[in-house]
Image (cartoon, rainbow, N blue to C red; front, side):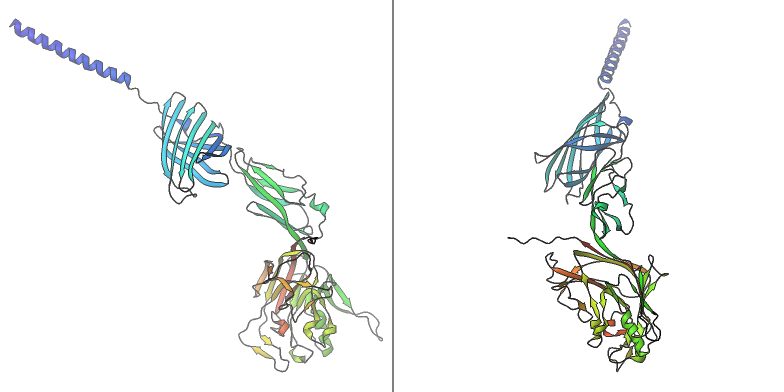
Length: 520
């Protein structure tokens, strides 16, 4: 019996000893394996602003480049890193984004590492990206490696500080205006990407160009140099630099005069008077012509000539003061003269207005020679601009043969608007209705493509196109004309009676080109 009791006591003590050992072992293991520290908002939605040093295939391609790194918490001790709009040496790489980067936190210090394959615009194949770095307090140091197929290995070193307040990275110019009358700046500044151009009238003085004061709108809290509201000399192109609020991004905008414009507004008209006769010496009003009459010709004198044949239709180029774009416009009408058509009188008389002169002295030679197209022009024409509206008459008439005038069923009349630059040898050289569309003296043309009906005023801006084998030579002499007709085939005496064309606010935009001195 005593032996049995002793055995039981010994076994119990052994169990307690094993239990104590296991308990001690478990406690020891818990002391050795501390739980990891968890990251919080200190790494969530924060920016680090600093500088990048960049190597491509171990060759330095950029140093101290300002940049921001955006960090977002994505999970338990996981972050996402974003380096946006990354580029170097003029090569845009794209946005470098790596998700689920592992972080180990120790007090205020963090170490992190991660890798991912991403798609970048610079490469058709996925690019392997890896990051490794530390954040000690508010300071980040990081290395980024990007393997860009074909391009090579891009190594990026970043050192930056945590931004207490995020600042905008936008550096845009959104509006650019210059307060000046339309008689000085005919086309307001137009923003095309980073190019801004405006057109001045050819009467604008150099002194005016040197004192234009622009008003500029830019991204919120960004800065610009030169400043808005400061008188600036635009004789040559001016570069404006917009810097983002965070100082990282800069955008350069080039502002220049895109050309000079000769403006034909059709606002001023001159009444023409007869000299009277023996029975009544009082001058009598005949009709009006648009000014300046020295350079603007019309078909009015030809239409007025028809009165000698008892034509009662009047003239066909009139001042319009109600239906206009601005102030006054010109109204061109195709007249029906079939009732008096003969060898000298066409059955269809289209209204025409042009740069040049109408000379009735050629009526007995060839009616088309009466239109003497062209005025001297210095400079290289760039574009032909203006506004028009058009309404075609009902019946299209072919009066090319005054002995057999017919109505062409199903044919619709169209208007015609075109500008022509042509070379001259003598100051008296002109083009006429016979050759304005065919002469080999023509160098460049700007032709309205759509001459169909337009119920409302429609603007056009047509670049001059140089004809085959032709180019502008600053050492040669040129004349220029625009020709507008209420019937496109009016020079062949075809068109629809009462076809009506309104034109307003024409411009010929050009650039000054100095003659090239001959090589001695």
